Image (cartoon, rainbow, N blue to C red):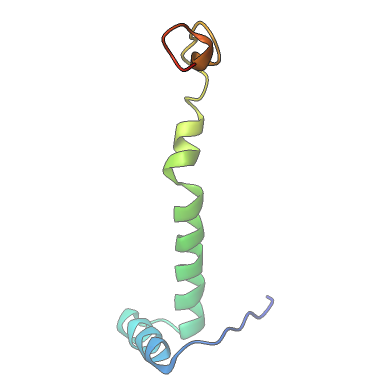
Length: 72
């Protein structure tokens, strides 16, 4: 498995170590799980969910500004 490293303030490192100890898992496993959860949240965003509904409703014109009373 490839290795990933990053720089973090000592306060963050202490919090990571404390959280991994509380869960009873090694720091590497804790960080791997946190990264996976973050990626999952990102891909399951509202925009992704809403994409399935894009274009369902068919309206008359594609540009409302061309309709009378809308715009110039």
